[in-house]
Length: 92
Image 1 (tube, rainbow, N blue to C red):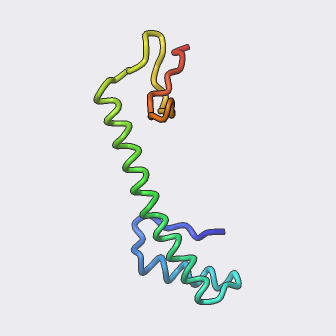
Image 2: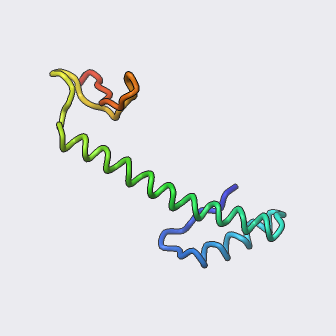
């Protein structure tokens, strides 16, 4: 089970704590180190991905707050004919 990063935890603190936990689970020092750095780097990737999704949603909302026909609302996006378009669903 992956070790969770605590809010505000710095890289050095996390890696040290994580390696200790992973070695207790029976992993070698090298395995534990690789696992912990992968978790830490994944956090940065996830944050970057989340920021991109939020920016895309904000851009769509700024361009047209409701790009769907009357009686329908936008609920995320979908791929249609190779393009990303609003996913329109009935209001009811």
